Length: 431
Image 1 (cartoon, rainbow, N blue to C red):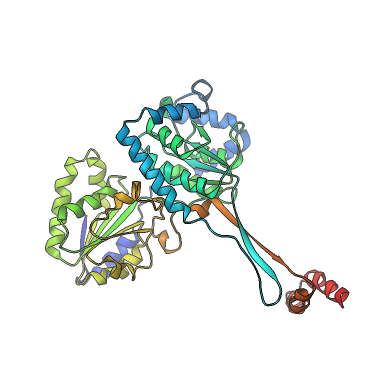
Image 2: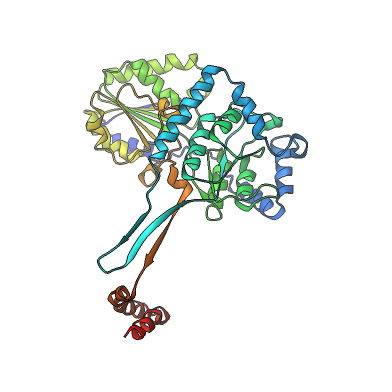
């Protein structure tokens, strides 16, 4: 963990290094992923079967390519009632939030008599990637599947690796609750390629969303254009802006809530109180050994953690904008005063009693968010990621007479005479 102070002479250079630190995996996976994609594109189902045997150590023909809906329903029914109720609460809140994102069609006639508008329609099919093994997150399944359902996607397919043929029952329960139509026992870059090109019994989709490892992220990057994607996500991150009125243990726990994800996670605290900074650092060190995820959290905090002391909390805001964090907590009495001045963040958590973890599960807003400073230009997953907009326009003779001459002039100026002619012939006919 590094400790910075904006009053130190070398602060600017030190903060630049923090902003520009590369936390993605060092291994160059692009070549491996490219080979996997080519294999699935050219060999289809046979390639998917062979790669699953090699990487996940089970034979799809023996274990079964698909997990049937009845299996998911049994997994849901078998859940402990407290956990089942928690999943239902999360699903209901996620659905309610995303239903308010549905865009409205437009249709109007302007002063020139031109009918203009746009219609929104869902994509036909969406593919959801759900990590397996240790990184089995039913919350992520809900965050991806429910917006697709709200958008009106007719076919929702899910791919999840099942190492050694093992399936996470909590993920299956979430799939039942979210209404997933198909579940394939396929993971990695080969799953993304199968969704993009189709692979025998796995039909292609229009959009692929969901988190994954470096190979999954690289496959989405390479296949964008063949298929739509949500985003290319990197390591998770949290920035907390907090004053000394907070219990140090609270803020330490907030920082560790992201550090336990992965050794590449970044957790940063901005505070205007040096003594409070010390207390938080000490609380982090006390709490880490208590975590089942201690090894990961320790490595992430030591490598990527930071505490930045500022003169006033307002001074932290331009620094936060430079980081454009995935998650931003404003742990102060009047968070809106700071929030109003923030330009770049994936999701913002307002006040002392709004830990980021609430947003991961049951609050409602999507937890699939831009990382790696991408919040400067990107947003979290939404209903719109599963929809597309078709514009339309209609002119009558009067409207064409009004707009046609300018169109002819511009088309001729661009050296496109056929464009000009398609308008001009109508203008001559009308007159």
